[in-house]
Length: 293
Image (cartoon, rainbow, N blue to C red):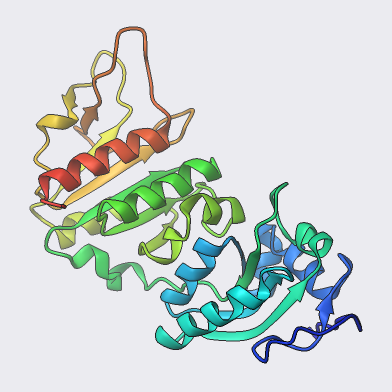
């Protein structure tokens, strides 16, 4: 699509494309708004990424950012920094343009818009059999089985990044990892943590067991009279591990036979934790046992 701009004053920065986006009805703003939805992202082949942290991580990961939209007041400061990062990490920036506050607000999914956003060509995970995180000697794979809240998924990506998780798998119908709310909650971790989307938990477990025959599969959220629960502090976290977190309301859809359930001891009267908090505690514990310092 040919994105036209108004004839308002141009930025003096040579890095900036000519033209200033004034109107929320500008074609670029309309394409960005389309990318707020899964349908729009698929049709355009682009993700909309909001906030300086997330845009920086996309550049550090070497992605192509077809358009970067900057608050006019911050363009002088941010444009050189972003271009320097792109050069350092062999990323590509197509166009950088400044925009009015009302145009930027229309582009953002938050009530308080940030000073920068970008349209990004998304990561393309390898096929299941070729996915490198499986093959790490001390693999720690986090599996989200139907986790649908964008804030939880983003939090888990951010914690996975912080605590050295090897990779993340999202099982359908988990939230779309390209959802701008997931990207924002992850603070850019979606570009740092290897991830993939798969349809069946059983297929993921089978492949993990083939690649890591000495590995363990751990489940959270066990309940009922037949569930044997092990405290997360008693787990051998140094083993290759597939850690499965279930849906916020329904738990894990289809655990394996004789599943190994783990639990986090809590104070009397507390019956559950938010899945984002639960997963973060568990991967922090794993990191401590694995010597992360």
